Amino acid sequence: MSKRFLRLGVNIDHVATVRNSRGGEHPDPIRAAQKAIEAGADGITAHLREDRRHIKDRDIKRLKDLINKPLNFEMAATHEMIGIALDVKPNAVCIVPEKREEQTTEGGLDVRANRTLLAKFVERLSGSDIRVSLFIEPCSKQIDAAKDVGAAVVELHTGRYCDASGNPQREELERIEQAAVYAVNVGLECHAGHGLTYETVRPIASIDSVVELNIGHFLMGEAMITGLEYAVSKMRMLMDEARSRKDAT
Image 1 (tube, rainbow, N blue to C red):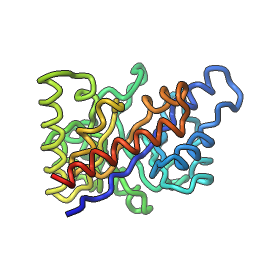
Image 2: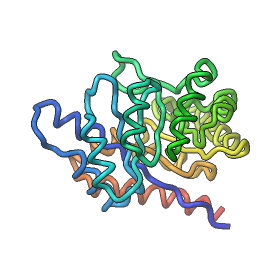
Image 3: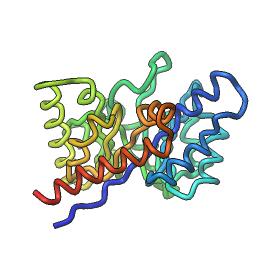
Image 4: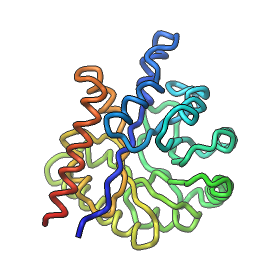
């Protein structure tokens, strides 16, 4: 039986990083988002960080207004970001942990330790018809907590898998696969992302329980060398091949 289509969300944060390094308006992350969609992206992800190091407030508003695919707004669980999300009304919000000094998101959200706050935020966002995802480690206890606070989706952190090799990588892959199955069994939609490349995407794409991958930094880096449309279309092809091979087994 054919498995569900695997969606590709493209994160365009680092187009804004390049723009901000010099100031001005170029390169434009909205134009990059549009090109990614033309090349096969099923949605666009953008992270508005507290320090505004890459995506700016105006980028989020323009993305919502100007792209013709769903906008996934990544944000920390703060009152400021909740207010922006309720104003912009993206299609989805993915709540991620955020520390000012980190270079990128370093791990999953500790939902268990922040149940009360997250439950309030999820309720407010869901009440405005914004779908809420929580970025977590592939762990059943965190999945249970995400379900308890009312999230519709979990996004599993794949960074440790991508950084490992040999047996540790196989163990991380198994951990992700088990967590994805568990998430679906408790009634959550399961996404995955962080650090995925051409070399690491296939095993994750072949996990039937995962229905969306969010990929950004690698694709933006490849785009500088091979072009954005080529980079996105190649990732789309690798994901589709991995999923179709799984269907045939």
